[in-house]
Image (cartoon, rainbow, N blue to C red; front, top):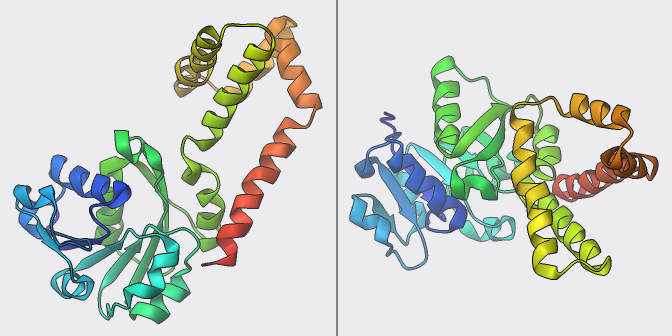
Length: 259
């Protein structure tokens, strides 16, 4: 159990609130060591023993670790001073340098969870340019693993790229599922059946990938030269992988421009 006092600015939103609840449910931190802030200073989290504040600077002063869980465009308006504090940012496109300049924080971690935080299945990459001891690394890793899995990446550029890859959460699968559904309807399949079929591909069957090598599966299906092979080959020849690369790169470019 962590002994540091953790403050989450934006700690009652979908992301910050999900993390706050996970920290309590997993026993990572006792409720009296958790502080969250929102505009009203009220939230049901207060019933757990956590403190809920409306003053972000008061949260910073009462915390050892400050987590920024606000929209990137809201960051400048926070106007907080966090000298001597450790700051963990969950914001896309706001650089460590910008956070340091605005807050004066001594240690800055950028982390990028995704919407699967809701079911505690987020993959969260994180980066810190400062040298961290093993205890600090274990603390950050443990905190982020309360909502899924986490890995430290060596460069901040990697966080920007992964903001457009894993940070998109269900967006790409949702697009695939929608496309499969619509194309099936165009082909004459009833919409409810089309939706079930697409869900079976994207949600159900894809769970097999948890225990199978994806490239090995593709190779085996292409070699079989059946119905699936024909569909795969069509996508491959149309440059599917390159198109995915361009899509992720487009998102990464936005993240790298900063907010």
